[in-house]
Length: 68
Image 1 (cartoon, rainbow, N blue to C red):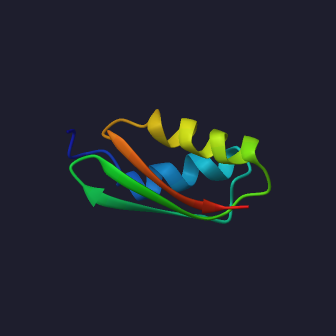
Image 2: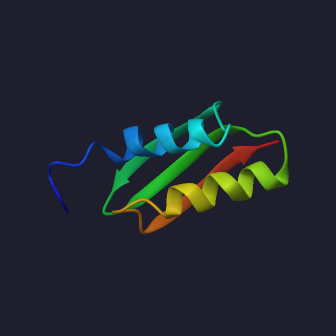
C-alpha cells in the first residue's frame, strides 16, 4: 500500500460526495475491510456507494450497513 495515499475513509468520503451519497460514514476496519453506514435514498444509491468504494485502492471487502 502506498503510504502517501490519503486514508481510505478520506478517499471514500470524497468519492461518495462526488456521486451525491453525502449521508454515509466509511470506516477502515483494517486489512482492506471497509464498513459503510448511513442512509441512502434508494437501492441504486446503495449500489453506487458500494461500487465507488470498492473501486478504491486498498479496499478488499465491504460490510454494507446502509439503510433506506
